[in-house]
Length: 181
Image (cartoon, helix red, strand yellow):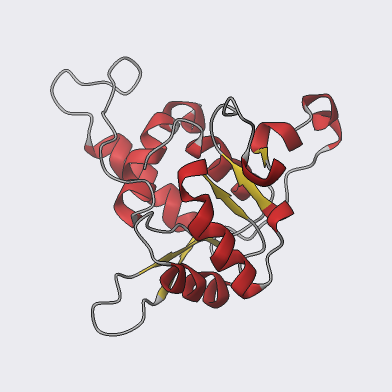
């Protein structure tokens, strides 16, 4: 499921020097557990509907429920298990003290995306920051045809953001204008 706040978390993880791995929302507990273990994930961002699966998989790999955060508006009954959203742990008054983590764009991994696993277990594919910027620039310059301009026109992001193509092609489209300035 695509969510409007997804990009905020993605760019925030990268800004902080983290590595992001995405997961298919139709994963079973076992499939999600495999990816969490294989990727070495330390925290999870999800939506309330996925929480039962996420909680079981997180427990299987030792990620405490306090490291599971949610996207979206707080449900009327509150977050599951008294959880919190990324907005609950973000204090804008402290941003002046935050420093962008220094990275080696060519060597440091930005995304660890997983294959579909059609010939066995899914395999993690490491994408560097340079890989991402290259994809953004390809989309920016490759899609400026005819009268379309990224400054004025919009692209509907129907591809799932957890999938590598949605993640590297459609999700950055919303941010390209800001990144290139």
